[in-house]
Length: 207
Image 1 (cartoon, rainbow, N blue to C red):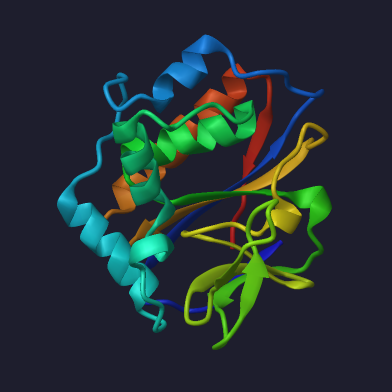
Image 2 (cartoon, one colour):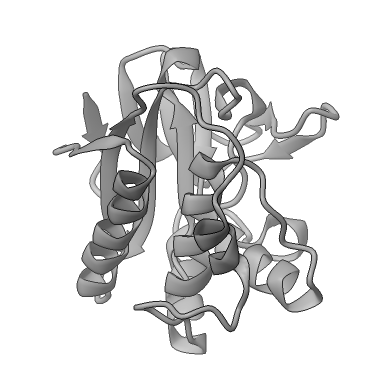
């Protein structure tokens, strides 16, 4: 299902999710977790943020400005009061990423093309990351690849494999770091428990 190229800093968590039916809007208990002051089993800190940036920097990528880790973007958006609900699948991802401090990707498996692998993107590799057609250069960044190229990473996931109201199966990736293995495991457990409360079934992916 998933092959991972050797990396000295990565401690990846991965699991599949299957939904029994379409999900409507997020329940209040889930969207409430998008607030910084929400009760949570994990909390980010400056030391962790530095480790995550080192993970992204290792292949030559510069995780600054608009290319900073997605977990940092969530903290800023929550601080500014602009982090809103998208859909239950994305909200569960964002709640855990916000409070754990770990970037998380969620990919619609049925919009992607196996095989899947985790590796560093070659220089000058880019893809569209939003509905407006904006692109990101992911050269040097650790990414999830499918049969058509890179489609997710710890900064911005590709538009072509993002979730939609029709999504039934997803692959979630918790971009954990060596030295914070327990945090990755706890984030995975919490993330899966939120999805289980939504009625989903999850299965850990072993690389």
